[in-house]
Length: 153
Image (cartoon, rainbow, N blue to C red):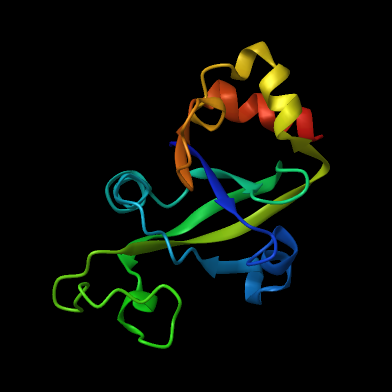
């Protein structure tokens, strides 16, 4: 099993939106960074655990735990000219972009703000706090995942 942190802007799709989704499950679309795509396409497996993180908001925070329930498949938003994630170079027969499905496990009682993550010496090496790292999907070590979960309980 692997562990991940996935970012979403709450104004676009929040953990509350996930909670309201059918079966508290949705596809994670719109990833348009090659490294983040590679993580989802090549490494994410059903059963992997995910920290859901709200980014680009007043208080960026880890807000809950999810699980990967469907492994990578073509991101259909790339083929839709009406979608803001449309990519005319991505073709159905040779897709560039992929997505996975995630299911909500639980919301944190206490969101874990980025400021607190940065203060925690056990989290000093996670990609989230590294300068210039803006990936929307990033790996975590089991210990880092567990520490964020501990902080949110």
